Structures are given as structure tokens and as C-alpha cells.
Image 1 (cartoon, rainbow, N blue to C red):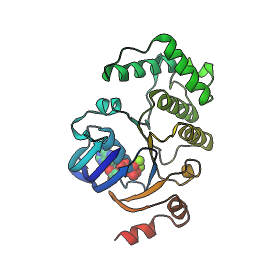
Image 2 (cartoon, rainbow, N blue to C red):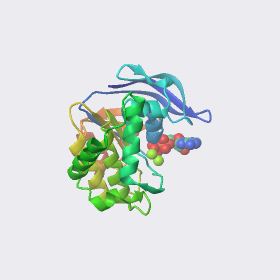
Image 3 (cartoon, helix red, strand yellow):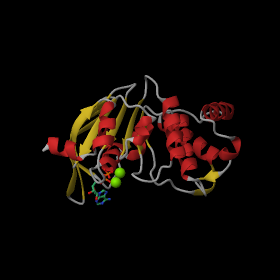
Length: 249
Ligand code: ADP
Ligand code: MG
Ligand code: MG
């Protein structure tokens, strides 16, 4: 599904990613772990196509399509979802209306008409029940006064509604309390299936107690220095990152 070959990327002429190789297949959950500043968020931004980063070498393809020519919106419309670390507040726009707008934007980009209102309502009902989101939440203004947990709930709800092929969840290195963590994990576990894939990026192993990855990669100084199964996450939790860094030299 996603294929990254020898990816190098820079910002302001400073090289951050130094030759990443990564292949994610449908049905897989991959985790990227690594010390602060190793390039994890840069990698998610480059996959999503954020313009401040420059791809200087390598390839990224998604279902066989070269992503390098596509802007972030086009990538999103192909089915790549990037969670937002700093969600925007949109006063006066409810969670429900925001979802309707994003769904229809995706449909339009893929040559489809707006979703009929009854179908939309059914979808909203189905997904909100699945994620145990109550009605009151749906009518609140987007992200306005949301707690950390509520922001995560909204994000997971958006993911459920859009049903992306590849979801990239870049978790902040600090902020998540245990409730927010469980909201993310429960959501991902309910939404994962054999046709979609998830890339979870995290500094801490804790999240991976709840979302069990198939593959764990360790990113150090812009390179994937180690890849393993879920047990690698436990090893990192116990032993820290120094041993991997040393092995990598
Ligand atoms: P991580 O997510 O692993 O903590 P980042 O991808 O955020 O790492 O950062 C990797 C490196 O890129 C760091 O040295 C950081 O200072 C640098 N960097 C990230 N974003 C920017 C930016 N917008 N401008 C300049 N440097 C940046
Ligand atoms: Mg960081
Ligand atoms: Mg980061």
C-alpha cells in the first residue's frame, strides 16, 4: 500500500530524513518509535505532503501512485489520513457539520455527488455508536473548549467517518493522559481491518500496550535503525534508546 524508498527530506536545507525505507501492507499496523528530534513528525509530514519539507531523494508511492506530485489534499482524497497534533478550533461549526463537509469534499474529489442526507445521518449514527460518542458531543463547536480526550475522540470519529486506507497517528511526546490514550487505542482497534493500515508514531511505548502493532521501527537521527515485532516496543521501554543507537553506529 505505502512504499517508501531511500527517502531523504530537508527543511531549510537541513537534512532531517536520511534514507528511509518502509513498506506498509493492507491489514498492518506499524509503529514508529524514536527519541525526540529523530524525525518522526517530519516523516508523517512528508508522507502527508506538507509543503515546508522538501523531498530531496527517494520515492513515496501509495497504491502504486507516486505521491511526490500530489498536494496534501489530493493525498487525503486518495485515502491517507493524518491526525492533527494541534487541531484547529472552528467556532460555530459543529462536529457533525465538519464531518459532513469533509465527507462531501472527499466524495467530490473522487467524482461523487454529495452523500444524501439520510445516508449521512445513518453513517453518523452508526459510527458514533460504534465509538460511543454521545449526541451532545456531535452538536458542539469544533474543538472549542475540547479537553485532550475530546480532541482525540473527534479525531477518531473523523477517521471512522472518512474510512481512510492509511491512517497516520502522530502522537505528541507529552500530552496524552490515560483516558485520551484509551480513546485513541479503542478507536483504532475498532477501525482496523484487513483492508486498511495504520502507522502509529509515538515517543512512548505506553500507547502500544493498547494498540498492538504488527511491526515496530526505531527511528534515530533520520534513519530506521531497527525493525522488529511488538516485543521491540517492550524492549525499548525497558532499555531506552541508547542501545539501539549504539548498535546502529
Ligand atoms: P520527532 O517528531 O521525532 O521529535 P521532528 O520530526 O519533529 O522529530 O524533528 C526532527 C528534526 O527536525 C529536529 O531537529 C527539529 O528541530 C527539526 N525540525 C522539525 N520541524 C522543523 C521546522 N519546521 N523548522 C526547522 N526545523 C525543524
Ligand atoms: Mg518532537
Ligand atoms: Mg514529533
